[in-house]
Image 1 (cartoon, rainbow, N blue to C red):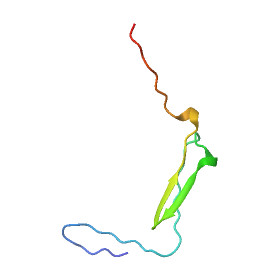
Image 2 (cartoon, helix red, strand yellow):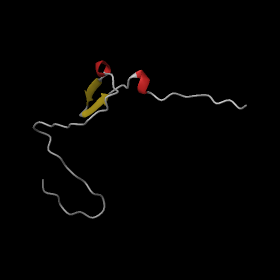
Image 3 (cartoon, rainbow, N blue to C red):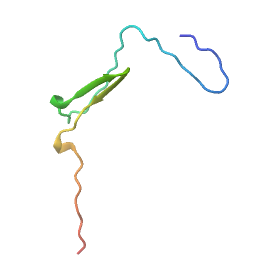
Length: 64
């Protein structure tokens, strides 16, 4: 698309028709059965949960 030269705020426009594809590589430590995706008012939200073993653990350190 052509962009006009403007002073001040930069604005961009995209086309709103046709197919769109976006690929991303995910780490291997995800729960594929728990993936959720929703589309609301043009906003795509994808939630990809980690497996329980991959989540960070807190370890309490006591003084001796």
